Length: 454
Image (cartoon, rainbow, N blue to C red; front, side, top):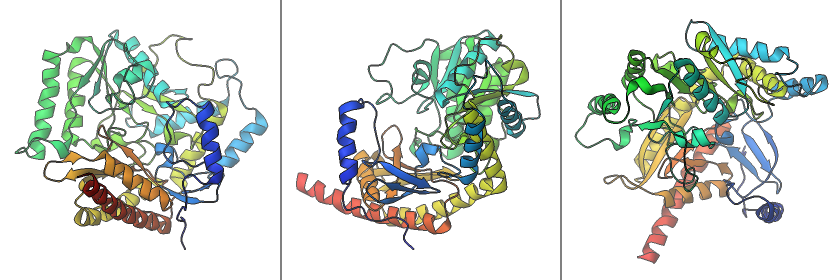
């Protein structure tokens, strides 16, 4: 059975008309991946208004770990709508907020007492983690990492590394935010082993406290356990533990940004579990609500209680619909064994990537953790020069064949896969075959263009 279909035209006639309406009313600063409009979605499949079916390897950029329209999520939302839609937790409380907070606290790493703040978006979670860290430590400085991504609000945009499209001409930025080096194993200096390079970057982090900022002024270090927008860059355990230990030595809070990595994506509830580190605070969102906006901060009880009543919260924070969706997500992960499925999908994808690597010289590197997998597209394996143009061609060729994929990385040359973890084996294999065909077609087209333009 073929789940995807070859798209004769993108956009189709109905989508084309909607694209025209979009251009007239939606600011051009709001981007899109594929020029199509969704009509229905279920599991790992999306059908557009023109009748085309796509296998989804993007998952709304890591939002749909439990798949589109999971029956348990829909049932939970219908039940909540029948009861009430919103009261405002800071006006009239509801039990689902408490139940979700209790479950998240039990699942989060560490045996210490925890408390949980619920919000709306990933950026809002990071903003509040920063507020809480500053309140608790009575310090102002925040350290994030090169190539890191934390959001598009003023504070999180400041913390984000990539200049275009996220920061260019949007300054001035928030003060007291510093950026430390982060290991990028594929692009390490020649002559260094992985262990030597990891030690080098860790030493650079130590030197950071000498050359850039005094550790006594830093409230928190914010780290993605696997960099998402930065290109699915996986650090070594020794680096993460080394940074964590330096934080402990200087009274700095360690914040794990689990917004893209959380909820079974890497084969664990949270990616930081792979590194045997217990963060002081942790930010969560994306797949937490299966498409319903909700986010949170999980942290040590004494840290979370630093803020006084009224200093945290918001109109829609931890909405009843979000809470019910998130509780259903946690049930689904447990009942359907999605942590184990995340590991299994990751193994299948990386084995296929190994075949791609042998077949296509344009693939410079393959990497990932669990079902968070990526390949880096280059012009030449020797020079490792990024090829954003070829990457975009591969994406377009995949879209034409009925597969949704997305790019990442500071050079825009990384293809990242975030398929729903409920994807069937048949859908997964078909999607990987489409990806292989798309790479092949894109390489041929790219070489022809290069000859024409030579």
